[in-house]
Length: 581
Image (cartoon, rainbow, N blue to C red; front, side, top):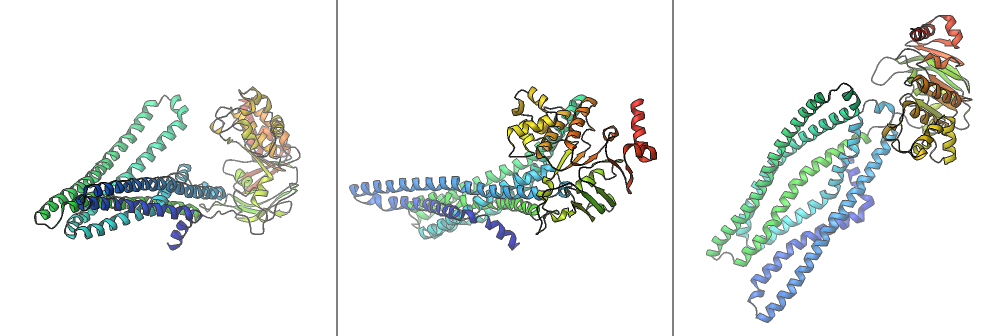
C-alpha cells in the first residue's frame, strides 16, 4: 500500500515547481475570498462613521484595494484552472506513455486473454480520472481547509454565538450530502456499465453490418439495441433522481443557513448581542463555509474514481512480460538461416495438454519447408515459436547454432518476415503501410518492394497512387491487394527467414496465383516456412512436414509423400477429388 502511493506521488516530481506554484495560488485565492468580507465589515462598522471627506477617501482607497484583490483572485483562479490542469494532463501523458510502452512489451499469451476495449479504457477513461485526482485533489483540499477553518475562526472572533448557530447545521448538511453522494455513485456506476453494454452492442452491430444487411435483420438489431437503451434510460432516471435530491438539498441547506443566520442575528440584535455590520459580515461568509463542504464531499467521489483508476493502472503495470531479453542477450547478426528444433515441446499456460511434443527438426539455410496437417495440429504454434511470440515449454530452438533465448528479441524479429492469412494494415496511406517494413526506407526502395510483390501496378491505379488513404485495416482494398501490400512490406524488410501462415487460403484463384508468384519470388534464397491449407501451392517445397497431435508424422517431397499413401496423400486426394467434383 505504501509503495503504491509512493509511486503515485513520484509522478509529481518532474512538475514539482508547477505543483508548488499551483498550491501557492490556491492558497492565495482562498485567502483573498476571506479578506474581502473583512474589508466590507471595516467599511460598514468604522469608515462610514468618520468625517465625510476622510470616509470618502478611505472608501475609494479600499475600493481600489478590493478591485486589486479581485484581479488577484481572478489570476489565481486562471492559474489553477489552466496551469493546474496542464500539470494533470502532463502527468496523464507520462502515465499513458508508460502503460502504452508496457503494452508493447507484453507477449501474445497476455493478449490471448484480454479484450481490446477494456485495455483501451485503461489508457483513456482510467487515466483521465487519475489526472483529475492529480490536479484537483491537493488543490481542493488546500482551498477547502483554508476557507472552512479561516471563515470559522473569523466568524468566531466576530460573534461566537452566531458562529455556533451557523455551524450547527453543517454536520447535518455533511451527513445528507454523504448519503446522497453514495447513492449517486452507485447509480453512476450502473450508468457506466449500461453505456459500456450499449457501446459493445454498437461495435458488434457496425462491425457485422454486412451480415445484418445480408440477412435483412435490421429490425431485430433495432429491438436488441432498444432493450439496452431502455435499461440505460432507467439507470439514468435513478441517477438523476439522486443527483436532483443531492443538489437541491445542498442548495436548500445553504439557504437555510442564511435564513437561520438572519433570524438568529435579528434576535441577537434585539438583545444587543450583535451589531448589524457583524450580521452583514456573517452573510458574506456563508458561501465561504458551505462551498468547501461541497468541495470536500465531491473530493471523496473524485478520490474514489481516481484511486480505482490508479489501481487498475497498477494492475496492468504489475504484469511482467513472460518473454524478455536475458541480461546478457546478444544481437543476432549476419544470419545464414540454419534453424534447428531440438526436442521442442509446448503447451499454453491455461491448458495441460501439449500442443507440440518432442519436435526434432533441422532446416538448412535457404530451404523451403511446408507444414500441413489438420486444424489444431500445431502448425501456427510451431512457427510462432521461432520469433519467440511464445517460449518453448521444453527443448530449444537455434538459429545458426545460437539458442534464440540468448539473443535480443528485436534482433531476432528483425531477421524474420511474416506474411499471415489475416493481413493487418494500419489506417494511413499505401506508402506508410509498406514502409512499416523498414521505417527509414526511401520512396525508391518502397516502389521497388511493391514491384517485387506484384503490387506496383494496382497501386498506380489507385486515386492518389502510393499516397492513397486505404482506411482502417485497408477496408478499401481487396483481399489479394492487401496481401500483396503485406508481401511488399516483407520485401522491404528483407529478412533471411520467412514464415507464410496460410497466406493464400482466403483468396480467389486469380488472386492466389498473383500472390503465390510474389511469395515464391520473396522466398528465393531465404529459409522459408509455409503453413499451407491449399496443397497445390506447396508442390515445389523441398520438404513437406505433416503434423499431427503426436508430432511430425510424415516428411518428404510432394511426390515422396504421395507414394507413401499416408496422411498427406489422403489430404491431397480429398482436395483434388473436391475440385474434380
